Image (cartoon, one colour):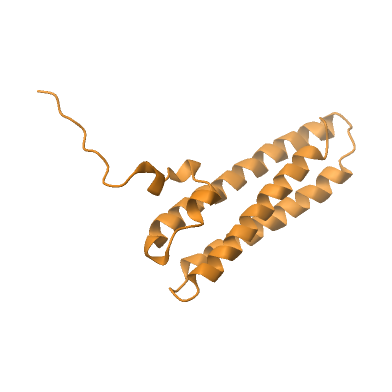
Length: 128
């Protein structure tokens, strides 16, 4: 006898896979959805960490090719600072109350956008 898997209670759009969540998925979450928000936010942080690792590997290759790395290093510093800001705002969200939820969530959005802008700048800072 075949077993039919249970269908999810909520549509997939309401609970994105943590690993593939995007900021646009998270920004509408309410205080009552904070557990899902926080776990998905960890996924965004992990994505930034992966981006930084990818960029660090590319940077190591630049050293070997004697390519100028000045612009790269400056933009990578911005990326690291943006990551620190994202982590800080994420930590603040974990302590958020219903009253300051939306305000703190907006700060997370700004931090997330900053990481992605910095990532794009680092990638564009060299053609190698």
